[in-house]
Image 1 (cartoon, helix red, strand yellow):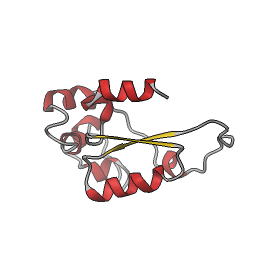
Image 2: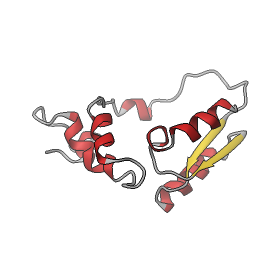
Image 3: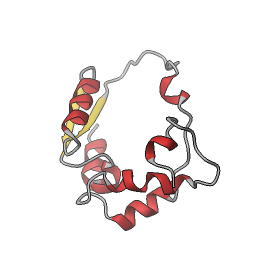
Image 4: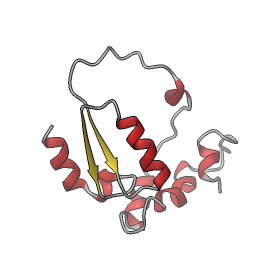
Length: 118
């Protein structure tokens, strides 16, 4: 079984490894109290591989002319929260929710309320 790093380009993906098999450990580490293992399995079954270039290619989006909001997941690791704070520095509004990585799975109502208020 491939590990998470293998799927995301560090060592390449072996053809025999289904995408969902590799991410399960990572998915379940989002926070056990946030996302049930069964729910993680459901979500991972729908994951597809994404090209590394989509993370590295410069944006061609036009300059923003509208306010932006960044939602920070405060139950991530300290390093992740610090990175999110840095990324959010240029946002007009910053919202912090007490959840780990996958807010849309673990806190869908709170996230929907936050997004609905924008």
